[in-house]
Image (cartoon, rainbow, N blue to C red; front, side, top):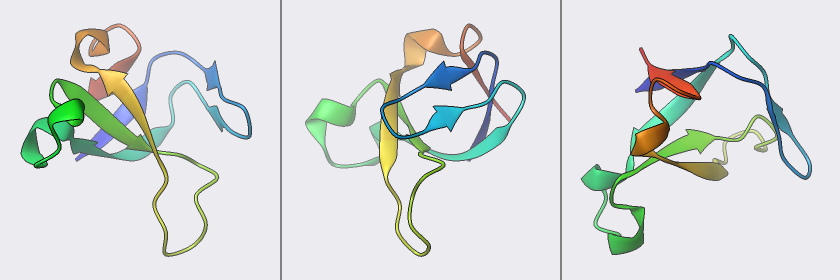
Length: 68
């Protein structure tokens, strides 16, 4: 799955840019209870061949992120 950021968001060591496409996962499709109702978005500062994730509530779909 991929998402587009509808707003720019800055983290500690990275930034999501408005209009950019990012790799994402549906937290409901994992077996991790704490990830239910979440979208995991790969951080742009992830090292090659590794995935670091930020979590966004699914309530933010259409407000901050949109699924493509």
